[in-house]
Length: 98
Image (cartoon, rainbow, N blue to C red; front, side, top):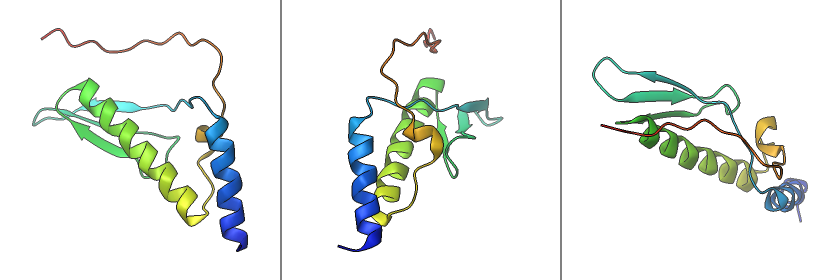
């Protein structure tokens, strides 16, 4: 087994042990409508949606794809995605009312 594959396998085992990781997400409204999000924790992550919730969901999906790509190619995960979260979290989430 190649060194890259061994490293990817170790990363996969470590990620499999993680319940969830949290990232910071910066969301801005677009002039033409909708929202765009980027994360200082996940290089290359840019998501666009019609609502804040849709934008967050798209960002979550893209983050999963970035993780899969890192593991597949033996690249290191962004540090924010290797932090284990098994303690209770207090979160503030958007709720659409219109």
